[in-house]
Image (cartoon, rainbow, N blue to C red; front, top):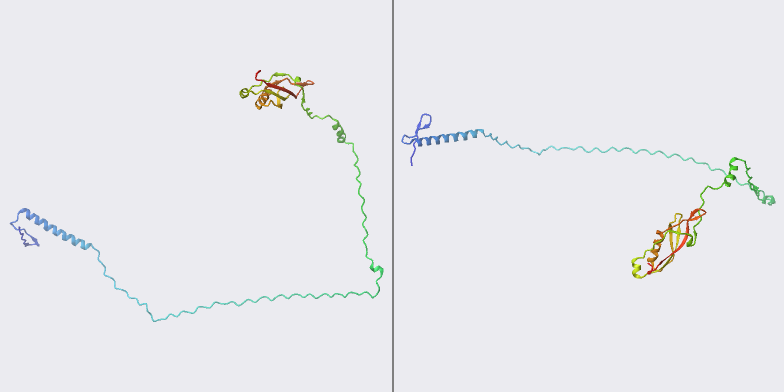
Length: 257
């Protein structure tokens, strides 16, 4: 280990020994400069710190006093004197009316005229008024009334109800074509359907009524459908077409189908 000896000279510096090498002398010089810089930095920071003020002396306050505070007594509320009530109005006294004593009749026997009670005379009943007929004035309106009643009515006449004619009174323009249903064919249904047909003014079947059934609803429906599809020659009465009822029958026969 190499010991370094310092010697003070001049301004308080140090001089390294002459037996040290050049690198050792530079190292010692750098360490010394670093130490001086650290000391200077510590001194500088210490000067920048704020001064801590000394603690203030405690202040003693005494709350005890010998003086006694006297409180003023409360002022009593002022009481208003009661208002005098108005004296009641005197009630006017009504003097009692003097009643005259009844006059007593003299002590004499009652007379017949005193016992009579006056009876009101009956009112005369008025005679019923007899209305007098108003005189008939010969005005144009009165004269026109009989004329208007005598004039013929312009309302259309109601047509008479349709007549029932024999089947030969009406001819077919398109004969009915009854259709045998497959179910009726399979079941072997047959029979005659009698109907009453209302032929209108245009020769069409307006209504069809079954007057006698064949015994099978399917055959009855097929006959009604055939009559609705048929066309008739309109029936003329005095040259005017009229609606008439015409009977007609359709026979369903399996052999003639």
